[in-house]
Length: 390
Image (tube, rainbow, N blue to C red):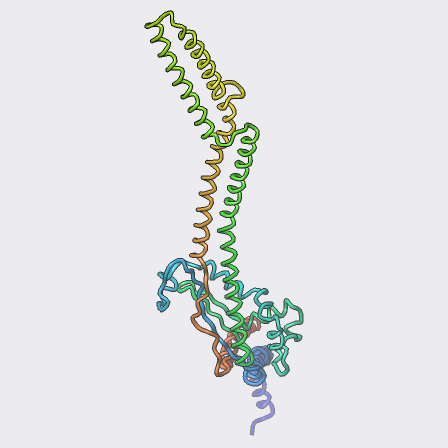
């Protein structure tokens, strides 16, 4: 039997590792913290996700539409999907992007919610707290409603094919199809507004030029009438022709008298007819001088009176040419506007979904598990480094 001293010696030998006891003191709080982290970072979020996705969440139906904004300027193959973005007419990417932006705008929401349909959809009783509006989570203002609705409408513009895809979610299949139909109608009205705006931009300039040219022609004609009245001119061409014809007749008579006078002087120098011919020649010369003076003489001559009128005639010709050019430009602008008309070509009409596709419960739960696992690993690793340093 061992003596008491030997027993005490054994005890003392067993007690030598006492300095290693603090390691256990450190490990115990770390294990306790790790259990709490597992519970808070992983178990609770995963259980909450499973509870919401499989029990609380209201099923949502999705209705999809697809369309493309086309231009009628070039023919295209309606059956060719490739031609939608490459060979089928004028590129309308800017207009398609405008329609896509409109689908995400407040104006679009106001348009489809004029009778309160969208408001009633989210205000229905029995919806889960994440989907209902108004609510403590979503808010109650118009801006909150706009942001809340954006989560249920997804629009995407595919540049490769110029196709706009829209997916609408709602809590019944009929409501999802109705909202999608209203979105399609609103998009078509938006395209019509783009047509009107483009037509106004193209034609308005040509119409202004046409109006200016017409006003200029009217102004020149009014000034020409005033000159006619002031200078007593009916038709300058006829007046000048009549004056020239009269001068030609007088000159012919004068030439005939000159011939007779010369013949008489040679054949009968003492004939009493010579005096008469000389008097007639002098009268015809005076008459011809007066006629020439009236046509192209002083201030009262026809030529002087026609100066202003001829200048106005030149201006009238220029104004008429400008008016003709403006009229051609207007015709071309209207033809160009008609050839560049946009239209919305439907590819997929609003469908009536057969089953609720949202929320994607298993996918959401898997993402929650992956995210929580990553966060837990990061936090536990950081905590382990902290405890190791201590």
